Image 1 (tube, helix red, strand yellow):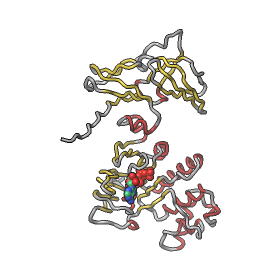
Image 2 (image 1 turned 90 degrees about the vertical axis):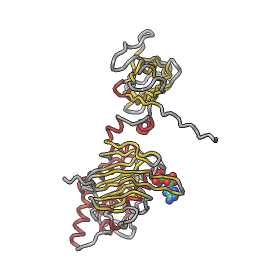
Image 3 (image 1 turned 180 degrees about the vertical axis):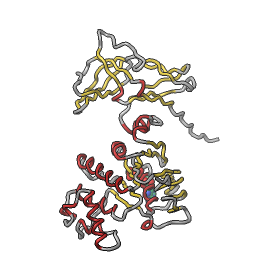
Image 4 (image 1 turned 180 degrees about the horizontal axis):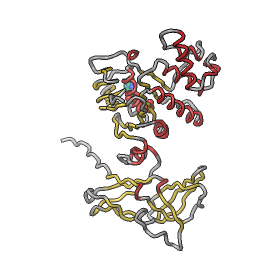
Length: 367
Ligand SMILES: Nc1ncnc2c1ncn2[C@@H]1O[C@H](COP(=O)(O)OP(=O)(O)OP(=O)(O)O)[C@@H](O)[C@H]1O
């Protein structure tokens, strides 16, 4: 297999009215790979996608595909010549064309060949039985499948997808996401999918590029991004988090959960110990005492149940600790403690992250 990326963007930047909204973004995607550009609203995801599509021009940077220059600030292949398929949230099928007509729309060549491609794609997206229907005779999910087939029909090298599933209800969305992935992988298309939903990115992506304030701050497989976030904000983007704060003294951070080792961090540095709710362990109170400390979970801290909610497969339990701080734990739903119950909490040491607090940048003072 070639090691030349299907899509490679190098140092792409774009400003609007003096404000940089895409800032030195680089990434590469291999054939058949799905990369999700994930980040909060307004962080520059769609602008990045529009530059790759050729709808928007970059101020600086280059776009390459299969080793061929697509666009820099001097040369530019027009959008229709880039071999890029687009699938956006507000995809619109042509209402006056049948399903077959919609999928065949962008295809050139002999009739029999075109028909074979249309039939093949409609079979792949499970829409063969609807080939002669019109869009208004289809459900939202069915229309989405046809839109996918239409986007794939000209065999794009690259597929750009901008929140393509957000118009669908949850159940259907999961089904269509999985089917879409299967089809895209089978076609060997490189996919860049924009989303602000971590769950969607985790489900779809081979690689996630986490974007914030116009920059890609972390790139990696979903497992790695979730389990080794680069900072507190990155951890919080994927789930609720609990934060225990402390100040370092002698390479140790003292907390109600015992000591945490923080080698190489200077004395006086404030640190946040971050743990996801599912990585807190809870245990019963034994006449005012908790379980014995262990290496895996450190010292237990006593908490009183403030609120417990049954969530189906799990329960969400909010605690007030003896020092007044609050923490949330996710536990199996067979356990739903009552408000006021005293329990002991422990942090799974192998699943917590310790981040030094960023030092605030002092405001410039006039001289
Ligand atoms: N043509 C434009 N003129 C001026 N500002 C723009 C233009 N296009 C985008 N912006 C601004 O650039 C920033 C990034 O927009 P962009 O659409 O890329 O974000 P996004 O991450 O895709 O957000 P969302 O998830 O809400 O779609 C926003 O603050 C937006 O208002």
